[in-house]
Image 1: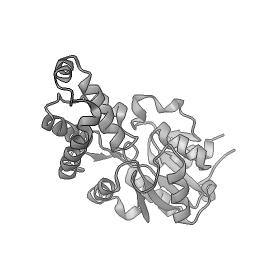
Image 2 (image 1 turned 180 degrees about the horizontal axis):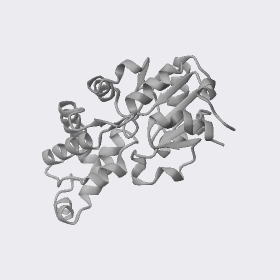
Image 3 (image 1 turned 120 degrees about the horizontal axis):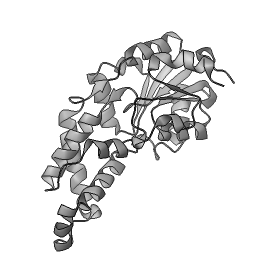
Image 4 (image 1 turned 60 degrees about the vertical axis):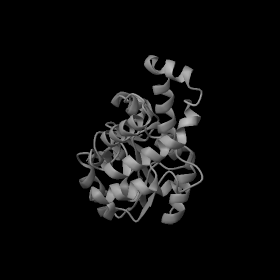
Length: 240
C-alpha cells in the first residue's frame, strides 16, 4: 500500500545514527574509560558495529573484544579478575563519567534533520524521540544540539523494562502520545528500529547513513529507505 503523512498522527524518531552522528562521542568516552582500566583503545569500526543496543551491551561487547586482543590475553591469563564480568561495574562507572563530560562535543546533527523534523511537525504530527541511549545522556544531547523543542516526549533505553528491538518501548510511546501504533511512523537507522516497529504494528522508515551494526540498511525490511529526513514524504508516497 502507499502511505501519506496525512494518515499519521505521530512520528517516533530514533537518536543515534538517525538524527545525530554520535560515533565520535562513543569513541572518545570508551577510549578514556578503557585507558582508566589499562586496556588498549577501541577502533571506530568496532564502535559502529556495537552501538544501538544500549550502553550496557556496548560496554560488554567492547570489553569482550579488547580482552581477547593478543596483547591483552597474557594479562588476562595472569590475572583471574580481568574478565568482562569482573570489569563491567568499574567500566560502566568510568564510561558514565567520561560520557557526561563530553556528551555532544564530538557529535554532529546530520544534514536535513532539522528541516525534516520541521516538515513532520508542520504536517501536524506529534514527535517523540525513542532511543536505546540512557535518558540521562539523551535529553542533554538533544538540548545541546537544539533539537529538544521538536519533541513532546523523550524516552531512553532505561525508560522501560525492555529496549528496542522489543516492541514494548514503541507501544508505550504510542500510549503516551495517545495514538494507535498504525498511526505512528517509526523513523530509525537500524534493524533494531525496524524489528521493534514491525512487532508493534508501526510503519517504519530507515535512513541509509546510520549505523545498523555496520551492515547496509537497505537489506532491512522497512516501508521506505531514505537518504535524508526531508525525503520521507516522497519516499512514503512511493512505498508499495
